Image: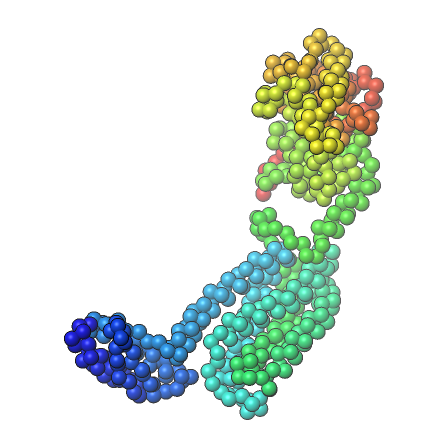
Length: 541
């Protein structure tokens, strides 16, 4: 805008503003001391609460491009009325995204809680019914004036943030009522009741709680309607109506009816989705299963027992397995490397089984898995890790032996290491080997049998209660004599040095022969019992 024609241009702008439909008067435009802005005060023909005022504000804003083209001036409309209109528009625009995020998250959470798709979808849709009822009645009473005289209400516009506030509070309470009702139904269903019996029992147990909670909240909000201030009265009425409608018409009437129509389908979830979603288990179903598994384990005093136990990881699994191995016995497990790894990980408490019952040393699977981690040691005789290649035998025995000590130290005492070496050499001599191991022996330079004895000694230095041995490439059909010698070495070495108890052993390989193994064990003084287990893997759907 040119300073020479500033006042003339402002006068023309004022005239254009005054000519806008809905403007009663436009004041003089006077520039500020720095001559970079000016204010024109506009008085509309309608009041600030009149919807026509919003149209007037919009027409004034539509005038901005014309003013900029004609006078090279940037214009904007502000003031209390314009700001309130902007806030209302912003809140109205945020309502649907807000509702979508809240309802969407609730559907995901309820799916995890109830392991169902129909239940959370039904909860979300029924909540929207409650919200629409609350919005509709609030508009009917406070904006349209229905029964307004009875409640002492003067009809007028509703505050802009009421929909967001009402949506949030009613949603929270509605989901509380939903969980109260449906969790009892699900608990009854998973405990063996039919779908209809579960609805009746769950409703009978939770209906009193929901009724009491809803009545308390309803009367708290309803008390503000007759005597509350204008804004508080609108909010209280909307919340009271929303809670009453949701609790008594939706949750207590519609929900049981829909659940009855759904039947068993109400508690179904696609298997692929069930595997991906965490199980929140609000009914304590997993605790009940753990107690059942613990009771089953207490009834079996064996060292390792499986009853139709399925090993699984992702899409890989085995046929159901049955075995009962006495404590201190040897279990021979034949299968491919993946199946053997599933067995080793399950026994070591690092993997949950797919189905069935099982226990190791009286600790149920998978409930007591953490208690097995420090009691089970695994060794792969067919492979050497980087640590076994970098350190000599004395260092490996000392460092693994430190795991068995109750003090924080990096290596076991030298006496314990020397005793382990001496015992390893005694076993080699009994097996007919002339080679003797010492602290400087390197595992990668040893022959298969001495190296296997050294690896077993390193693993047993940790003083485990269960030893899982994978023969790896040593367990082929052409090395049966070597396997027999290794099994005999395991039998001789696998004794807990502190307690004197035999260590329960699981030997895994591709080809294991129970007869030859029993022949090798027959010469032992330990009188270990042995069992055979065939691991049959398969792809799971």
